[in-house]
Length: 279
Length: 307
View 1 (tube, rainbow over the protein chains, first blue to last red):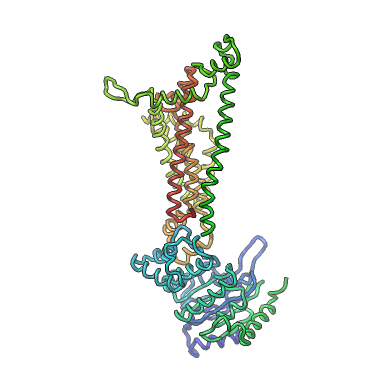
View 2: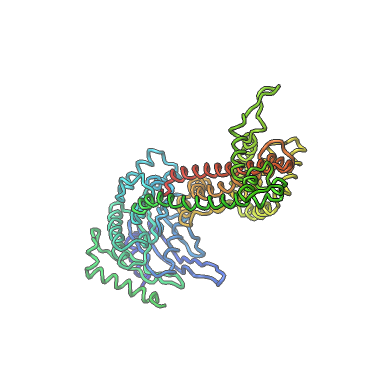
């Protein structure tokens, strides 16, 4: 069932019989085992996934299901112990060296001694952009996340939601086509989270970027995604992949519609099948 | 914002409130000191032979020329006479030379060794910390020596350093600075190892996603993150650097410096001179710490610390 779903999704992005895959992310039989003193921990086991350009894919599952680990493997922050993974045909390391993705962490991870503008400029400084280019890009991306006017503030002067928006501007500043987001709104309250979800959706449809989004919130996943990857722990694996096309112009009200509830129900069923609700 | 403004409102009140307890304790210490002057000095002939009531005996005890314990005002008078009351230079056949009767001259001799030692020690301390943070080998090989270095009593190693450096023609300022540096690199190393490793995993991973070089990670992340730790260490380092310079003046019978004044004072039973040198050293240490605190405040303010 999973495989069938994934094949459908793949076929949309891949020309039939095409050898070279245009997938942005192509993961096959990926495994990652951590060696610990208490024996091996199977963080990921036999994961298969393809993500096409412009998709918004959410990883959802309980703690320990490997969703963050999978994202970190894509970002070359963890090294898999088995299987293959390609990002635009490159290894994760090559993709990282070519700066093909922007990463948004669970916390804003802004450097507290830098102003908001300087924080957004950080990757640009590392990459050696000119001062004029840095300023222009910082201004443009801060405007994109509605933070114009806060350039000279320090992180502690901003609310948690604003800080996370600044960190998104930082990830977008060098214009990567792939955005990896690890529970970016997990620490925020529901009202702020709703607002940021709407803004993120608008940003995604405006910029046509590919976004991989880790979350443990079912409504968030259903609201944002074009596909939802349901994961389960021990060992970390994919148990369902759900297509979720609620249209480009969705607003928060969509969450009361039957279509939305149907998909949310299926996500919940998937989580239950993976024993995610067991103690 | 409201937290910041309320902190502003709170700060002056806290300062007002804290001044009174400090003054009360100071007054109590002074009272106890004055009271102790009679029993501490009662074995001296001037007091054993003195007749009269308690108050009369106290008046003698507070004005002795070579007391065991001088009264606080005697030290203040001596401090005044030995600094403002004495010219800093004197005329000799060779022209104007520093006047060894002026305590500020001695203080400068010690201070210059302190500052040089502090600079050497801090640079060395930071360099060792950078090495330890970036290399496992250095961490394993250096760290035990760093710790062992501080278990050796400084009073034992100071004469060795003075003699060893003296044999290669280095005397005066440099050996004292080396002793200061030997003492003060340690808190800097410990503080900076902590500071340079203080960035959290996310902040480090962020640099990794940018493929930042080790140098970029150091200058853009580790170094700024270590600043609060650096200043905390420097405050400790500057005071023990002063101790190192004074200790460095003791074993050789140096002619100049606060340590030399302490030593000559004890040779000749000039207790008031010893206390004056001691107080001068304490004031010097306080000024040095205040200076670093001011630098700390300015730096951290520029780095966006909450006021």
